[in-house]
View 1: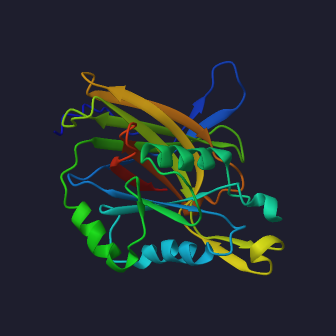
View 2: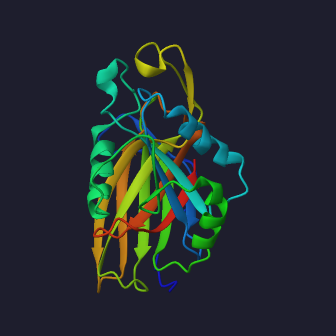
Length: 266
């Protein structure tokens, strides 16, 4: 299945003088990661700082950093939703796009409700945490039907205004699904909030794997089995560069099942 034809130009740090401009752009070296032969399991947490029952779920996600499950088996992500903001505390990590994704995933799985904290394991509602490690390892033994190569490099065109150029190359030739959706995610770790209103008033909350930006879906249909998608993202000043990770994942757009995922640590 490894048929991806992917040309990467490894760029050494150089100054590129923009034609007709007085500013120079610095391009950092390319980082690339390839998905493994096995299926990588994606764990999505839908959470909110305005929800009193969410902090234990947030702590569970953070604890996965020290767990024995590797990123070639499991990739966690935390989507902060907005629908608890009305209680009194506005979650600064929340985005209505994440509300929309949660609702869409519920519809694809023919579920009538959404809630927080909610975990989705490779697209399906999950609550059996006593068996979590065993379930993940069993799922990760499955052979992948989609291949992903994720590449990233930073372009600095002016102080404090860096851009991240992402390239995602995909191969769906081994998949029985005629069309596949792909997403790119920027997430951040080691975030702390002192909550001063709402159900968690007075609490200090710690977060990891927080989704900062969700891009996609980009659709690919057979017989076009290979595809390359480029995306440029402006890095926001409040994002801590050393705590960023980039995730790409493939999804069955009809059922919400996650077919493959890959993570690049910034």
